[in-house]
Length: 318
Length: 319
Image (cartoon, rainbow over all chains, first blue to last red; front, side):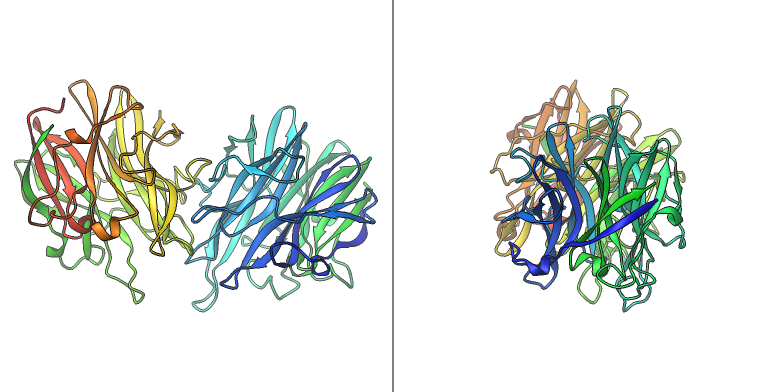
């Protein structure tokens, strides 16, 4: 596998973003339109307490990714009301084109006291061609259950033979290294299936083996089919030290499968890694793979969790 | 109108000492019949921490079947542990509702977590007892019934029943967090889910009880009892807009033939606050049960059970 990096294509700090969003363009995800590529992402605003709220915006590129043709002038989906699961942000925002319908699987954030946050997966649809999204309800479609105690999030949809597969993550523990430190979380990639995209059957198995240790955190799976196999890219990191120590931060992981269920981890063949210098030299995270005119591309975030935007890579050999 | 004769207060938690989890309050009583006694599960608050915050535990007292004012045993530890860090039940397991299943006793409870913008959130968990109801082991770290598209938060107040070989879980779901005098107040509605096995639940996604006060009416404690070919539900309700001033919660009543369609008629409830005593401001969180052909109601008094619960006996029939 070999990916050719095409560089940083969008830096949010160089644009005037709506809603007082000051930086971050996290988890870029694509809908391909006839004449342009729309990339949804989550930008960050500081609220009155100084904490961050993620809001979903988009930027439209021409089909060569050379030119920005448009940027949303407001968020595409409102945050939740008081006490709701997505009151304190939506990130990631996974868009999925199902025939003609544009659907979104959102990850809603709500702040907690003993730990920083709880998340759950919501659902919304667009009735205006992806300009805005309407939630099907005020609550989530997928949240903690008896075997997945917290932090259900990062849903990615893959449809095969009329069955929907969702790759997502759930938390397995919150750990407090010491009294003065914040609690840190550990989460793993799992899979659910559905006949309608709304009601999901889960078996709560962790489908991707660890390469670091049992506290490895795995996030944002994205799946694509080519060469008679299914390929999953995701990001992973250490539980502790990942914000400041570049050897412990997010990197890109890879696994392949022949049946969408059983996955073989194979990071050495991912074909993409940190750059020596520049915007993605310390961290790579939140990959999103899509097809465009017979080519396969990956959008991803770089250093500091995408504070300075996202870049693009093209698959040139497999 | 039904006629309930109040017999007095059964239990005052302030009379109990030496139990860290039973410092204040005795809330949400629910019963389980044994050969010689009636076990009343209830929930209480621990002593407060340096931030004046408490956690809720559930435990029980055993009442002599021949004299329900005679407490023959008090639990010496809580029946359920609190959840791990970040879990849905880290800060409380309350309320609790038991049912026998073979040699086991299954207990449904609401787990409490603390939030930033609102004081708390809850979801419903399940524990199983294999020691005759003294302790319950959770079947997993997460909830068995949690938030969904049309039930965005606060799944609480579970009451488990078995009718016609199916399990019915009556519970409340949050509809809206209101902001009253700058503070969050919840509006909750009574709902039901149905299950074959008690683990996988099919939410019916409908409000069972029509509002009486306003759309903001808060409802809780949906307690269902079968008698005379009908299902009878006693519950409590209040107005979240004025509750902090009036301190009023009241007991409502509805009946049903099929457990899904309910006709509300509070005028039949037949029980209200007393003129004096521990229940002169509030009467809430009813639980109806029978012992040797007599029908009783346990209920909370003032300040949502801070001073314990009382008992009333039905004179006549539930028809």
